[in-house]
Length: 189
Image (cartoon, rainbow, N blue to C red):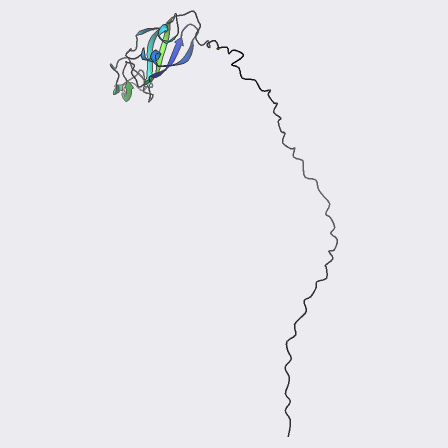
């Protein structure tokens, strides 16, 4: 399915509006060239008439009026679409798209030639739901904002005197005595 972003410039108020189209509405633009006029009825803007002024493909390469077809080419340029101002006589090789709108174009730039009744950029009227279709609204709870505790300067405290600790008497384990060796006395004869 083809999908385009239309950037519509309105010289009357000096603003640009962006509209996304897809499906049958987008297919009406396929094969059109830069400079062609388009009626607004083809994408639900009755009364308007536009002229295609340019665009860009899905990689961001700009469309140029002087490159024929739905192609991408590398060309030497001095100035114009796709270049910045350079010194005199300096040519730059840049990649650009042809002047025909095809499937890989993602953005199409248009200019208003004839104004319609409905102003551009006005949102469509919302569709009202019947009461049976409306879900019951839950009461909204207010969120409480927690405040961070305030940091206070540390207070200087007087050193505390420590009371001498009483030591509990330690129970000593009974000592085992080694067996005594009997001394044999030498008897003198």
